[in-house]
Amino acid sequence: EVQLVESGGGLVQPGGSLRLSCAASGFTFDDYALHWVRLTPGKGLEWVSGIKWNSGSVVYADSVRGRFTVSRDNAKNSLYLQMSSLRVEDTALYYCARDKYSSPNYYFDYWGQGTLVTVSS
Amino acid sequence: DIQMTQSPSSLSASVGDRVIITCQASQDISNYLNWYQQKPGKAPKLLIYDASNLEPGVPSRFSGGGSGTDFSFTISSLQPEDIATYYCQQYDNLPSFGPGTKVDI
Image 1 (cartoon, rainbow over the protein chains, first blue to last red):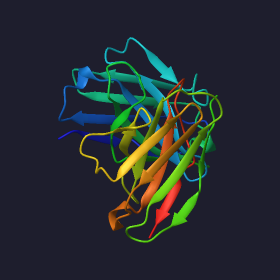
Image 2: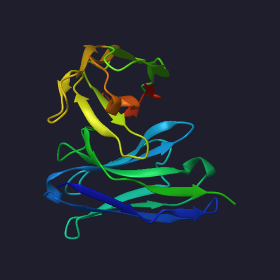
Image 3: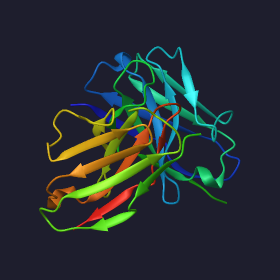
């Protein structure tokens, strides 16, 4: 059974940093691209970032480019999102999602349950 | 950026009703469109990919159609377990989602 389990969310002040993790199991991790997608009450679902199976290609939404960094460790079956210069508008439930393909093609076929990030003073 | 709109934003229907949701893209996206279902407190689930292809394991009462800028999603006979919010998502360029349609019974 495919499982994606996010962790690392919490309360952080504006301008602060946070690192999210996603632990994967139930599939061959390095066969697939992975993504971060967030859910906010105001904006709904927003794709954040994606990474190729071998980390050879990473892509970001304009809203986070230059502030967020996606990475993966295939030996640990884990995906990460380093978030810095956080803003109030980054407050969201952050999901880890698997792509159907090894490169980002944006078919999100499995999702985790999400980890909540709250940016507030 | 490609903007996605959905209509209606919410609907209420009876068990057994046919439900249709529409999704419109701000520019031609061919058939690069997916549909997701999100039940309260749960992660989204991929139902339809490439506008009209049913994801394995998804009941056949769900279907999708359209191309270019105009797309539709249909539940042929609404069931109680279909209470959810439904999102379209384009992937012609960097992906973006529609605002969602909340379906109630």
